[in-house]
Length: 359
Image (cartoon, rainbow, N blue to C red; front, side, top):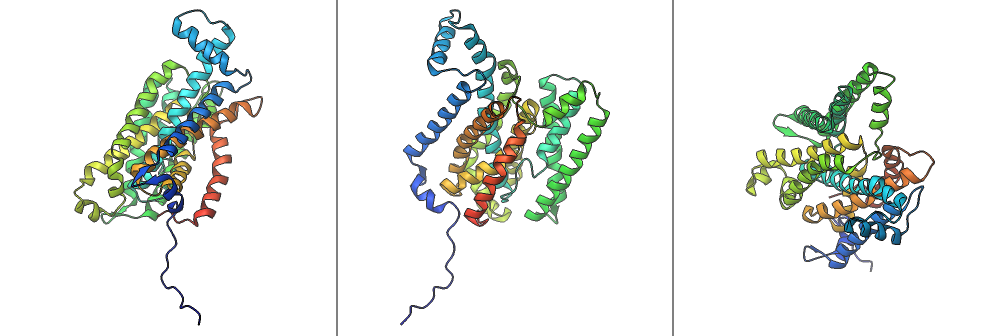
């Protein structure tokens, strides 16, 4: 006699199978953490060594030894390439990738929306408006960051205000509001490009909007990276509470969280990261959307684990993309082009793998 059919069987949540391998008793397995750090270090070494002028590991160690001892470089060309180009660019790529991945994970948790990222909520477009204005006015990096942050927070406030209806914010309304704000911000950017000087400002703005880590120096990193670190650290310290924020407002209040303070604080941290990234290297898409989903597939939906895993995966992915951007062709490929070409197919594979079930 045939067995009766099983009624009500639910599909396992995305990432639950792999999470059993990488997580034990609510903590990441030691070997998995070491593997993530090993991946990041390997990507950093590839980033430093690869390029039109390849540098071997012994040459890197020799140049580092010369720098620490205060001696002249054994090979001046190696020293100038490493400390003038490769090291600053590698450091910036690490912080940009880590920051955008953490910001994306925070937005997705706060709004309980797998599509909520700085790109889809209009934050990236809003910060770009502020940064383009600062570039037109020929402000320095600090001014670009300040104006980008101001417009990013304004764009986020407008998105939330449009999406909020009768005291509640729905997922559909939030995404639609982000699309509207992004469209308006992009229209403003187009108007500013029309008003910019076509011989000097317009090429600078156009190339900058496509995203690039070229021309970075340790002095510019010293101005921009602290804001990325501040926002990332704030989200990392609040990662324990993001799980509760992902619940409904009534459930979050019942858990004892002051969501009127906590939610704006997380949003401000994520916007601070986005504004700093945009002010230093233009728009960089897909990192904040793709990496958090990869992290959830690996370790489940616990934000206490998703945030650190997203941080390491985002840094490694950004290093690989930047390395490809400057080595694939004779001229450097804009970062946003590569992130779209690589991120979109990867996201399709994730959709096919999970069936869109991120919960």
